[in-house]
Image (cartoon, rainbow, N blue to C red):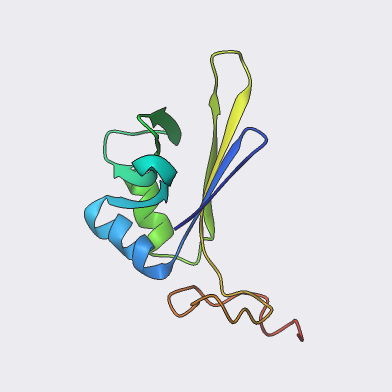
Length: 127
């Protein structure tokens, strides 16, 4: 799972196995260790009680919660992403995007892409 945070937005890209795990178990997570023994964690949860996409931050962890019905429809289709917005305390919007991770259109020798989705533009682009 890859996480990108920028300009009031959270974007998570999940590989095939992670999408299947989220669909089947309701949870997929990852972590990044930092010096000093601290760890930054992030996860995506599928919840039958959720009606909209939401993000939470607590104890060095970002959690994105998605409605279970939305996850099931997304995981079992060609749909690329799930997106939503959450109103912050100051009235600003936090944009949330969870998407399937595609194989890159250019060769990257240092990245294992074996569990990524085929890129929908792969047959149109010559690299």
